[in-house]
Image (cartoon, rainbow over all chains, first blue to last red; front, side, top):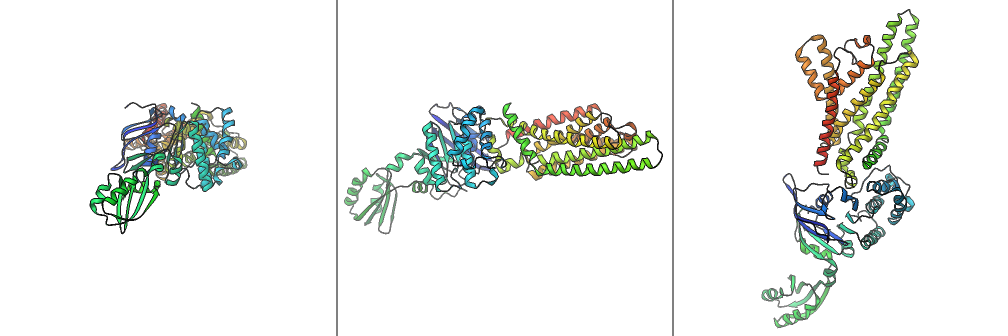
Length: 308
Length: 277
């Protein structure tokens, strides 16, 4: 497999087995450059193991993975990668400034660049007042902020963020959102793993849903959320035959009590559906449109997933 | 190379902050004080009755060796206790993930950490060793025979123990790592004594057992070689002491310890590279 210049991350058939436990079954993924890419799945779906394989922390059992055109784990390419682990920890006797300096230095930044950039990112993450405080006294939210600062200090081309808003207050979440957008505008690719679907919804361009160690679907989120509509029709006399015919336009069809619920990719098809229902002798009392949230898509895709 | 230096520097600073280091320094100072008092009492005893200068010199040299043995023991224990969780603990807590994803290979990361701890150990051994010799010299006027050889061999012994905590730290948890390395240290101690005993019993089996123990963990043989280098011939002939020269480790034993260190470090690097973090 040869990597494409269009993608920041490419994997094909990536698999990781720990003993008898298959953590990642078959991960095939292409992450376009210059986007914020969401990585979603239930607990135990293999998200963290996948990220660790992409970063070279975990060795794959089989399959191919390329990051910025280089094999995953390549030491030199890490100069262009930033990473915020899920539970960021580091030597807590360092001050915020020392911590960011150390990480920048390891990424090959010169002293002159460090003097310019370190105060800048510390201010960006809202810790300017605490720059000379030891990390030991930091709250969980402050640790996440300083973790984000060390991940972006060297202006990487690809940034992996594992639950970046964990422990952050609403203002902190807004800050992270702004930083991610600024990084994307700079040209960086952001690979975001988060359980906060509302954050993914407003931040990401594409999203991949992972289930049982496999990508089940990848969506262009801007199109999906703009177009996809959930419809509730207050109706009587909805036969099984009518429901079967409805699948031409809709999916996720559910008939319960006196309501017919379904999901359509575009509201443009609604007039056709209404004509079909009337022609099928369905008694219609009302129609309601609901914009589909990412949470609803997530639940629909994951179904009764029990992976933990 | 620069990243190795960065890691070594931060590891040295991390190690220097550990309470165990300051506890060991405090314990060293306390034992040094007791050592100084004992020497003073002994000198007073010598002055109270007529004694041959030769015998007096030999006894005072023997007491100096006791002080240096104390330094050696403390340094080895400090080495093991400060370093057992540098890899095992950071792997377990996930702290290592933030560093291992930087443009530094795992071998550079491990070597950097190793050099950081080795630096701390060198400073500790030089300080306590020099202080012990200074105290003994100020009270009795006695100096060891080849202090530099002794210093290097004691430091070498500590670095061998350090390599073991690194190697087992890539496999085991902090606690298990400590138990295994201290257990090996006990094997080395046993090996040293068995070799001493063999000098009297002439039992081939005991010699073999002692040699095998020293091959499994050559740390104690380095101390016995250091003792041989530093002591006067008479002090070394004292039977059943940790610095008796009944069985003197050869140059081959020292070379073996060097090869042992390289192999253990090589295995540590290989396993750290191969394992998942």
